[in-house]
Image (cartoon, rainbow, N blue to C red):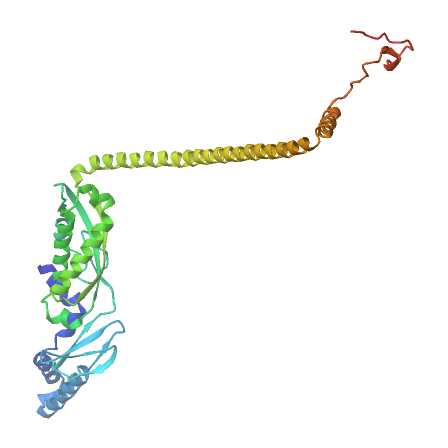
Length: 359
């Protein structure tokens, strides 16, 4: 990948921190410049100038600063020496010690199928030729899909990240693409595009982390997130129609469920109400019947003790209940012969007597 390697020295702070300055080249350039500046090319002045240049180089290469979100891995003559925390530190100059800054607290990401403008990490975005190729996948039902996703990760072990794998970020891209093709290949195109996104993200995250641990890459994967998933361009229009029909089906199903949930609970409530009313009416009738039976039994016991008195008392109590309901009625004795003197016929408006109607 020539384009990625060409940019690596400019965009990658880890590679830049690893490379010591070319001392011989700097000394040669300094000597040439001093010979041009000194009159007559004096050797003593040249030695003094070279000593000053060497002292400046020693001072310039003997300290380094580690940012707050990083650690530095120090090597002496290329051998791992130690890790140092953030802050200002000193080391042996002139390439004896080298310090590689590794951002262990920063969340990094890799994008597949698309590119974020302004990205400084050459491994964050795919190459120009790889962007389309890495999104083309075959699903389990032998359909094609264009899958875009993002992997977010952190550097958990700087020593393994720098020394165990030749290029862990490039390896992570290969691992991520391989795992995603495997996971997508186990599902149908409908699951990949619609309902199976969360399961794909979870399974891909688990498998990527397992491979990263197996390869000792020193990387901890935080999240795998699917972005745009589309069918290939030649069949995209037909697929959109099918997807729209499925959405319409789901809409009708949801509306039917809404009507069901609106009508059925109301009917269930009315049914329960009717049942409770029937139970109440049943209990009322039973209690009334039991009360009437108890009252009758008590009355029977009293009747047996004094039949005539009890009979007359029942007769009087019955008349007390019946008589108040008789309004505008005249009750006469059976021995009454003349009905007219007892009738208040009143007078008409003209003062004449009304005629009595006899049956």
